[in-house]
Amino acid sequence: MAMFFKGDKVEVCSKEEGFLGSYYQAKILSPLNDNTLYRVQYKNLVEEEDQTRPLVEIVSADEVRPVPPTVTFTKATQVFHYLDSVDAFDNDGWWVGKITGRQGSKYWVYFETTRDEIAYPVSRLRHHLEWRDGHWILANDTFF
Image (cartoon, rainbow, N blue to C red; front, side, top):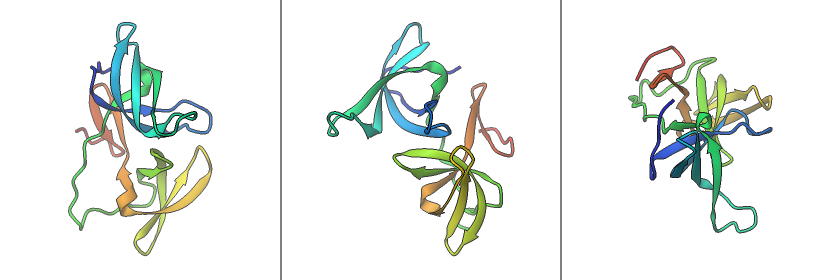
């Protein structure tokens, strides 16, 4: 498990019902309890009572990962294939899904947790990366 410090940019994987499989950009405000918990401030989520204030929460270390690297592709390789694992940016976070088709310049993404299938432009998609043992792993097990 990675250790994070004040000011580090991270993603928080939600374990809440209805938000499973989603990642939200945040910043570490402070590590707590020997780095088993972190106080984070979200980039795109706001307080319910005051929607002008960014949401601040305490989350478990196993819900926090570094921000994935930007995987650079040429125009020729910025394509997705059937059943590729992707993250789609929607509702202020990145949601894990699978490519199920293409229609013009949009890709259809199926989300197992919600059973929704939604079309997205390439600009709102990224290849899904998993953080394992200190390495980024692409769906085809390529290490970064």
